[in-house]
Structures are given as C-alpha cells and as structure tokens.
Image (cartoon, rainbow, N blue to C red; front, side, top):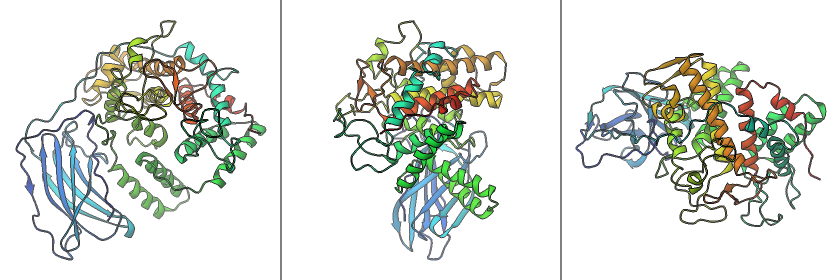
Length: 529
C-alpha cells in the first residue's frame, strides 16, 4: 500500500487553529472490519467538529498505489471536484483491509452532506465507490475564524512607465540582461558537464563565488528554464534565432532522462495536457485514463502548504505559474488561492525589516512587499540561522506575475465575483473598489475597472521591489538581505532570471503587446564558447 498524506481543500486554512477540548459527535456506520471478500471501500465513521471533518474508512488492500477520496456538498449545497477530502493510510487491520483516515479543516466553505467515498486502485486500474448521502451536523466548539490581514500600506494603481522601461525589449534593459544572463548558465564551461546542462547558479568550484555550491543541474530549475527557452523558440520568426533555440532545446532533450518528484500541480498539468493530446489523436481510452488520474490528483491538492506552521509558502504562487492547466482548477482567481495569497504576501511585513525601512523608491513610487519562501524560513543563502531567511528575487517576481495573470483572467472572463473567502483579498489589494460579498462586478463597471487597475498596480509594485534591490549591472542573486536589501546567497541564480522573464511575458499579455515576446526572441543569444 502506498501511504499518502491526506490533504483538504478548505479555503484559507492558513493560520487556522483547531478547536480542542470540545465534545465531538461521531457517526459510526461500520464498526467492525468487513469480512474477507467484503466491500472494497466502506466508510467507518465521520464527525464534523469545530470546523474539521474527521473520517475513517476500511479499504481492501488490492494493490500498492491507492487514492481514497470523500466528496461532499458545501454550505451552499453545491459539489464540485474541489469539494473533496483525501484520506491517508493509517494502519493495517484484519482480513487484508487497511484503515484510512483524514482530519481536514473545511470550515470556510462549510459542509452539509457526504456524497460518496471513492477508492482508486491505480495499479490494477479499478475504481470502487460507496454512495453515502449522509447529512453532516456540526458538533464541538465553534469553527475558528481567520484573522484579517492588516490595513493596506499603499494603493498602487495601473501600469507605470518605470517598469515598462525596465522590462522593455531594448539593449541594457533588465529584460535583455535577464535573457543574456540566463543563457550564460545554459551549457556553461564546466568540466564534465554534458550538453544541455543548466547550472542552478554561478556559485561553486568552477566559479569565482564558491559558496554555496550550486554547480548542479537541478531538474526543476533546468526544466522551468527550458520552458522559457521553448517560449522564445515558439515566438521567434527569424531563422537564425529559431535555429539557436532549436539547437539548445534538442541538447537538453537528449541529455535528460532523470526521474523527479514533481509537485501535484505540475503532475496534474502534465496529465491534463496528455488528455488534450490523446483527444486530438482520437484516443478516447487513453484520454479517459489520464483524466481519471488528473481527477485523483485534484482531490489531494490544497491551496496551502500543510507542513509549515504558518500554512504559507511560495509554492502556492509558483505552483500556479508552472502548474496551472488553464481549466479553472485552482486558477489565478480562485477564491481559496486569493485567501492564501493575501495572507502569504502580508506575512512578510513583520518578518523583513527592510519593508518598514523602505516602502517607496527614490521617486516616491510604491514598492511591493519583499517576499520570501515562507515566513519561518531560516536559510540565509549559505546556511541556516535563526531569523536568517531572506526575501528572494524569484518569489517577489512570482507575485508580480500572479497579479498580472489575475488581471488578465478577470478581463477575459468579463466579470469579478466576490465571496466570503476572497473578501480579504479585495479589501487589501483593491480597497478603492469597495466590493461586498456576493458582488458580481461586470466588465467596464466602475468596480470592475477599480479592481483591474489595482491588480495591475500591485503587479508593478512587486516588480518594482525586484528592480529596487537589483544591482546596476542587472545581476540577480538568489536572495536580497532582510535588513539591508543587498544581494545574498548564490550569485546569478538561473531561476531568478527566468522568473523575471515569465513575469514580463505575462505583463505584456495583459497590455496586449502581441509582438513583445517575438521581438525579444528574434534577438537570439550569444552561445557560450
């Protein structure tokens, strides 16, 4: 049996506290372990106590790789693929059964009825389910409530010329420097490196900077770097540039045969892309198999990271950037994502002293919040120390991209819906819109335009923070110091450059600069000798 960790979909689980010492009413449906040959999946018991759904189930041990999911209706009586809770292995019991359990906060969206429990025996390609129809009644103490974010320190609006210039397709711009410096780290002159290699950064035995040793090709970093190369390749219209990108892409493809553990969002995106390809090839059986696997992953994903004390992690916006499949499952404007983003971004206000020292640039323009990996981070770029974590260039740029992508998605949808879950997001990042829960802002309305203007303004503000702490030569390290803003850690981190580029591409899309990536791509690059 594969022991999977249960993960829920409760919105804004960040900062949630559990209700302790309160009596919980448990409904038991099956006390004894089923006899051998009995049902393959049976719900044993459940309770909804203090906002947390607790479940246990008997699962027949039919194969190694299992996924067990309970589907339910929320407080509005609605059920979607996201109204679900994944169970995790607990223990082996009699008669070749296993006990699987979950304990998942679901109090933001609420729960009214358990619909069914589904068991996917992946190795043998079988799915089993038990219809439930069980009404869920709350017990124990009251559900917790999320603390509200602080009052906004600024209200940046719209696109600004300083960021437009900094990210222009022009010689000497940060855009041009980021492309150049990214390609310097592809096929570097490193002894023993195979063709197509991407070093994570220019710190290590071969380079002037020795510490930390990032003279490695990390599959994650190199893959997202080549994703940028592929974007340039697809956009280019000049034969010489196309040939350059094609050459380096094929070097990478032939050099890589490495397994890795991708996060769920990236795995799911790959499956969704596979579904689309299979349908295009009229292979309905493969499409169905891949879709089932994608749905199973959906039931185990969460918009927050449960292994951090704060439940806040840059993996959420980064997962969106590199894993969103464009099918509205945890999209840019998903209200649960928004609830997490506002708490993630504002969590660094009291963590990094540079925020309170500098909130505007020399021209009085707003700087976004310096953003790190997670507020508890103790990695200082070369080692660990108490209060040693720093803001990162790539995570700050990721938030800029998040806001621009949200702006674009709302504009494409033609409306903005405000829920109880997303209200704090709008109150902090778009206070001038003055939206209320239940509001649907239609395109070109005053409130709609105010939200879009705010999202674009915050995107520029976060990118301005990257700009403010970038040295004059455009070099991007891994981090910038929490106290001084000076570059810190690995120098010339490849992902830092890639993050600025993908964010810039997103900004250009929002601004309808249709030739932006093409013009950049046609410049080509200088190959390492």
